[in-house]
Figure 1 (cartoon, helix red, strand yellow):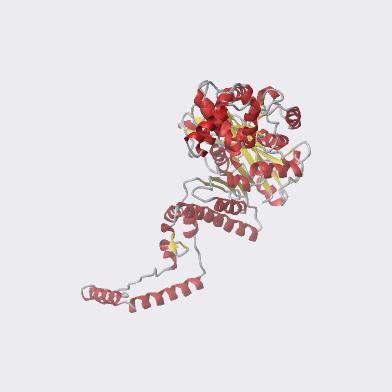
Figure 2 (cartoon, rainbow, N blue to C red):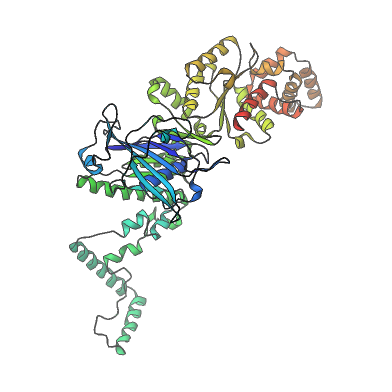
Length: 579
């Protein structure tokens, strides 16, 4: 590969107003719908593919203003086979780019700072795309527009090379449609089949033999051929007479009748999963042909691939397998996905998370260099492999206990007046008060808002506060953590908040159906009504997964409002979501 698009910056394009994305040879883009993943892929298409799709709707717009230009900066660097940066471009790339396009940073490493702008050509009423080579690559600033205000456009230089082709595969792919369209990658390959003169003569000879045998073996075809030869009685035909050819006579016509079968059935009979997967694999074949030719000719070749939702219509194991196949495509791959399985299959350093905060989109990533091997194992084991849906959350609530895991979603439904799944809030038990740190680091790195609802026994509270400090987050405790009252756990807090009667009702709903008869039920009811505070607490903590949801439903049904600490937590989240 030898080169890499290391960084991309985008201003004024769709929902991306001022964002920087660092890339890997294979980059996986995660995030909820409308967070900017597809827009990023389209931005790459403007730079390296074509911009014919641009309309006025592609310019960033808010209630306050509309962008009058689109600016996309990319930084291209030379790399070693292992993906690490090296100081100079290989000779073939240096010759291709020319010295006019190559710059050196302060450490004397070569790079290309390419800027692409799109503006309206008022005279022609079309959009003009222009490439520039900048003089430098400045530090990115999060304030609006600073990255491009700090640097002029530079020297206008074209930047379209056959050696750097761009391939875009959207989510609506289908190999059946690919076979029909000559412009598809499969269609281009089929229409470009070539054979030597010797092979053509040999193949067409074999086809002629097959045609003769097919006609001779069929009474119907033989009869049709004999009858049609009567044309010669009324025509002055001096050429060869009638031929019936069940198979195409000429090699050049073979592609017109190509069909693809899989597992003894035509692709027409397979579902969209197989057809979508097959379409992606034909792209891999297409690129591999170019890669093989470039290696044989010792010429540079660097394809850029953008793929939307490769998981479409595929079951989980197929999604994992497909990701590994995509990763094996030559060049640089950029994949947008909603699949927890694809995200989990990627390496931590390959993941980029898009999150929309108000009018701005942020892109987060996990700086694996800042983590020890053990910390990376914890993130993989405790977060990605078990809770992959976190990549697509609007907000995440962490907690330690089983009661919270059962009760908090029920309370959230009551607070937000709709199922919590519709709010985009995820509830994650971390498996003990000492396990918050990898979860905090994971979500903090990916710019996903997170909150902690914690017990407040002295050792628990001290541990949670220390983990917050160790995470190096800029968040203050009051912004992201709600502790119950000092000395309490979740169950004690519900009782101290005065919900003893509701808890007793929850116990009755579970215990009374077990009674043998009405007298037994009456006696059990009286027994539960006499339970002391401590007895109720012992029952609640003895079967947390059983009494957690029952207690939450009983409190909601009482219409007395949510427990104060839970209301405080949801108030904090609601303020963030509506900001």
